[in-house]
Length: 150
Ligand code: IDP
Ligand code: MG
Image (cartoon, rainbow, N blue to C red; front, top):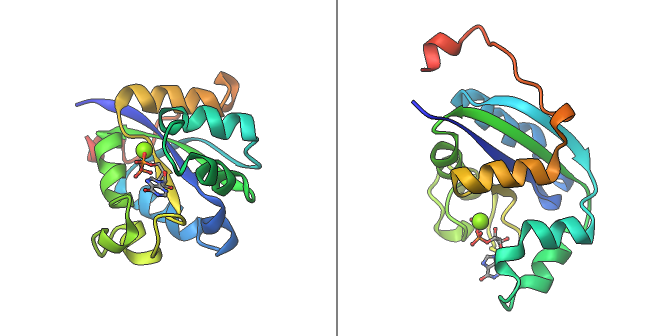
């Protein structure tokens, strides 16, 4: 089974609404393991790099504003099938169509404030984690329940 890494970001609306713990707990309960975590202000430069693939989209400027409007919590997670599992826990990009039970389906209403980011491929997971964390900030550990999650 594939151990993958994903970058989760509790976006500024999630932090301001006091949902950081609720969001983190969904991923922890799923069995994903924290390998890095920090409360931080994303710079315009980092936001533009993170959303580079959307540079030509009409919503790009607003998206950079959104990600930088206040502090975020960036979380690097690791686990079997981490990308697909976390994307499903997050739910569809448009919160109004996100399934109930998903984070966006339970806690969000509008695409401009959709609460949480999650990497969409194994390659992007590696890249995005390395954009937000130095090697020294990523700490792997053996967990007691590892054998029960594989
Ligand atoms: P994702 O976050 O579900 O992976 P992407 O398509 O990668 O969705 O888009 C990145 C982010 O850009 C979304 O989470 C959302 O904040 C924003 N976004 C995407 N599409 C639109 C749009 O049509 N209008 C406004 N914002 C958008
Ligand atoms: Mg995306």
